[in-house]
Image: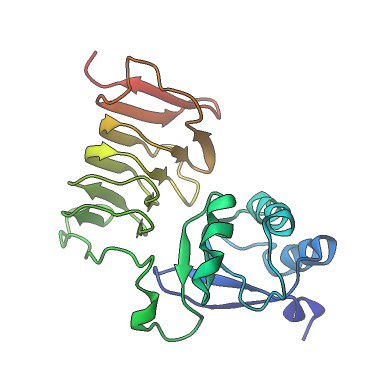
Amino acid sequence: MSSAANLFDIKSASLDLLAIVLRSTDLPALQAAIQQRFNSHEPEPFVLDIEQLPAPDSDTLAPVCAMLQQHGLRIAAVRHRDAQYAALAHRLGLPFISGSGGTKSSAESVSTPVAAAPVADSSLPTPTMIIDRPVRAGQQIYAKGGDLVVLEMVSAGAELIADGSIHVYAPLRGRALAGARGNTAARIFVKSMEAELVSIAGVYRTIEQDLPQSIKGKPTQIYLEQERVVMIPLDK
């Protein structure tokens, strides 16, 4: 077995995602291990499990998260059995999952996704997931392989992820990440634009200042144009 196996494991996680279980924050060694293991891996979201780190903190984890993203491994959430690390996750700008690896238990309800099934329609080229209830802070929804449609409000601190496009027929106050596996043609459609962050195919745009009045709280379309996230009003 290669030395890479001593630095991290890949285990099953909730949220229908894999988890990277960190055993070290030695950045050069970890980067070499990631390059060795994921040289030809298709990019997709991961949960970052920090339970086996002796003293995780934002100063050491922020460079690790940046390095993982550079290698196409987008961190969707931070996981630890101790809920006190929720503040650490928030400092990193990530959702927090309280729980450990392995079999999911009822204690992991802090940040579990809203359950939903893809729409069964064989005529569609890709599956579509429909969420017909509010998405609360700390919840994450991932529409793997297709589009995501949300009919109720997405609260601040919630996160939507889809391999295809995202449609929100209500206020979007959390995060929306479309084209998660590199689909640059994916788009985000929002009835009321109030998002914290939007992303198309890994190109992010954080909302650090007030949105322009032309789209703030209004129907908005978001797409990628020459590696730049563009936000325009839908009701011109």
